[in-house]
Length: 381
Ligand SMILES: Nc1nc2c(ncn2[C@@H]2O[C@H](COP(=O)(O)OP(=O)(O)OP(=O)(O)O)[C@@H](O)[C@H]2O)c(=O)[nH]1
Ligand SMILES: [Mg+2]
Image (cartoon, rainbow, N blue to C red; front, side, top):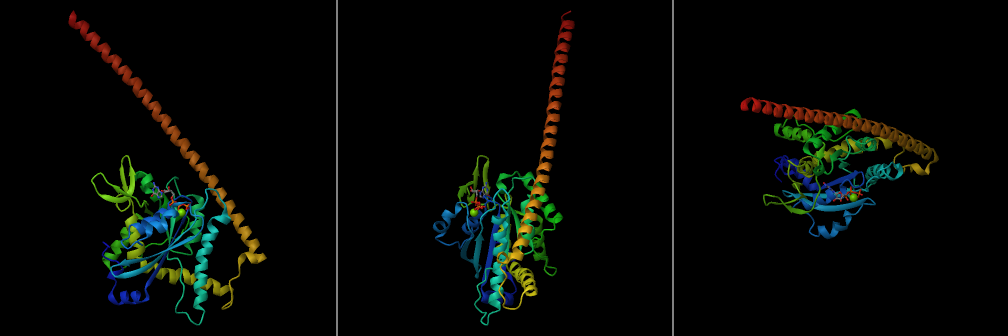
């Protein structure tokens, strides 16, 4: 609501076109189990003015571990502009590599939405299409590690070529500001080095304000977030959504604490239209083209697992994937061990330094005492 360049500020004509179509918008969340996906969805709804009134009853029990894909819907209103928001919550991946149950249902779900839309487009009556194509996929990175886990890298690679991928750093309140800043730098480096395709707001060359806004988004990416639907009171008496600690309150909507506000603004305000357009023009088009090349018009999609040739291929792929992840995990562990050893060594050095300082201080005290004694004797004489 506070951003000057929301949907409602689009040039009038464009606004009308968008409005008359109504705006469906679909967000998906995925990532490791327990990373805070469901909590963030709840937070998103709870902090929106037009959150469904029966929100608590509807969503309260979903705070348990999510075990299957769940589709939540809400109508939002942004300055007279209606958004029919769909949020797709997915079960988290386990801590160990179990490919079949982790990334593949999510990737399949995304492909299936493209497939279903494409099939509807091929029908004679195409006006009332069901459209659940994902416009933005939030990928949750746990803040626990020193860097991005190999499994996350592999999954993000696959997602980035299919949807607008937006990595987020979850539970920002569990890190110190310095650690968070360093983690952000590392995540950016990994994204760059691994060639992961992520969504970046475009820089508008004709509109200085919009370009500055896009740059400010770039500068904080990947967004750090804090999820909570609890109302807590800050030391200065404000009631906010946040998490209470002995040291104070981590506030969801405080930009000094995390980037939740920026992320929300990107999703349902400033870049909603761009996310939709790029889904249509890049991701859906890529899917459509790839399918057109491999099958005839109207022909159903070959179910990979029904076809022995693909089954073998898929098994091979799974094996390769697992091996690759294991290899990377091993390298990662080694690297982590190395860092821990290095840290221990430095701590030891520090300890030694402390001991020598203590010894030197002791000597100094002795000298001082000796000196005092000496001068005392002289004085008495
Ligand atoms: N400190 C902190 N804890 C959080 C945050 N978000 C969620 N949690 C906690 O993390 C735990 C898991 O949260 P969920 O939202 O259920 O995680 P999930 O990703 O949906 O988990 P699965 O459904 O199992 O994949 C809960 O105890 C939450 O209260 C956060 O921003 N900060
Ligand atoms: Mg969940």
